[in-house]
Length: 143
Image (cartoon, rainbow, N blue to C red; front, top):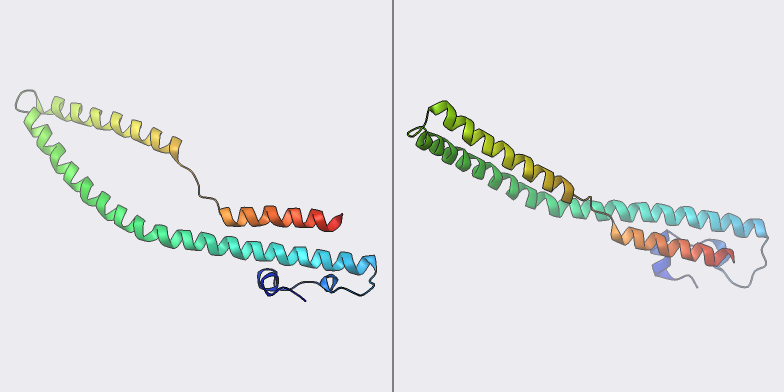
């Protein structure tokens, strides 16, 4: 009998899964190709669902990060204006602004460089594992 789990993943199994019948090689190959197509479609559906799930989880966190970053940026701006005004008491205002701006530009460049070096794109791990299993299954079927 056909396994229900296999039917739900691949959308169905070809006729070659039925034992006890003599079939031509062309029919068997046709069913194998059909099942491979079904498996590829199933893997694509799994990858979409997996990426959609990851994106949903990330969206809520991204919203909080965005709001927090906006508020922190406003706070940092006020602190930098205060620092510039404090430095303007001991040096010309233009030098104080240049000094604060230069330090910020250097710090920003360093942080952007480090962030870009550490940035990675998430991969659909379940889908990759399933594709590897399917490739192994196809190799076993063709022996």
